[in-house]
Length: 235
Image (cartoon, rainbow, N blue to C red; front, side, top):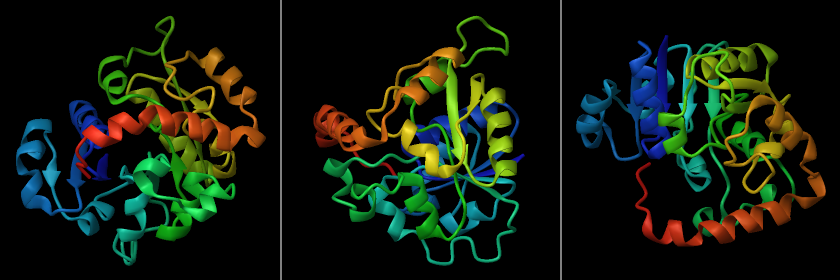
């Protein structure tokens, strides 16, 4: 497949590398322009492009940027892009990094907020796994203890395509429902960064409590404060 990636942080470049290894044609963009991505693109076997070009690169577009950067995306990012192009959102909301986003603070799932901003339905995936695990721990289908990843999104056809991609990357895909259910895989929830198998993941998703979303987020945000103070922004 032809796949566009918008964002060149740890998850973005990891996905670019892994998808390239699987034979997909990957176009990658960041907020600073393709000339800043030449070396990375060469390293991972991708093509450096603009965000607008990445959005028009093929069957799947992956947005993997901090939540604070979503409103900075071009307003016409998906203008003219066919409706059957699947958009994946890997983002997570961390107030320490992103500032306060009122709609999310009031309970809107992160990726539902992203969908509103870009004017397209999205599928949430690859947000609850560390990049190191994503690049190192993919296993063949049927391997005992294979790590599972949740996929939530609209419409069902798009979700099914992402579920297949997760499987291809070496992880057991778990259908986590529509985008309004994606809060179950947000930062701090029972499934977040735990590298669970499919049985454990389904239990963790079911165990998440909507009334505790603020508590989950605060715990994750507090734990990440040191990281955000030292990690450069590579979007």
